[in-house]
Image (cartoon, one colour):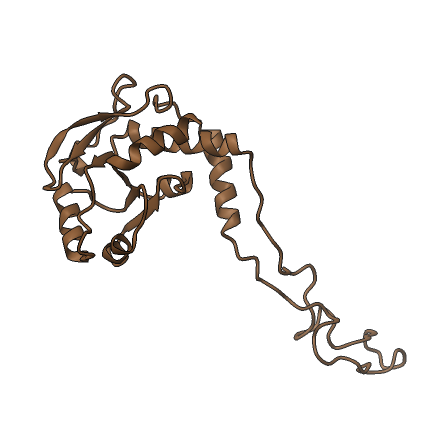
Length: 222
């Protein structure tokens, strides 16, 4: 079973081969990914651009401050312009006064932007390659979620001896699978055609079901 002590960097000749585990959590051989796509090459610059985009797109952009014209009050001049010996002031809501407006403060804005589709795809392939090189990609026959029971699925993953966070990649998320996995700590479930480079790199292990492997190969080679 792949435990923390067994995580070693693979050579490029073996990087596209991943272990397969059956429904009992026992090793059932290896599975070979498309070697033309998942060859172990990692484009760090592209990964950085992709992760920056995904994180920017998650920002809500709702931070807001009030300018001097938006702060309530301050309509009356606090004292006359000349003759008091004090500095001239037009409003108590000017930015240098306590309770005044904010200069150049944040306003609601949209941080979203996009990079070309080919760059997204290449970044996704690089993220998988990074996990393959460290031996943190595992294939399974399927998820025992027929009954929709969290305990059954949790016990299954305990047998795999995968520590820390796990990204489970499946072909499709049905209602029973969602119900069985939603309360498992440190686990995220994603469909193979929607998983992103950010999903992959945000987790320690990537577990892929057999029926999702073909879709991953096609998506990487598209």
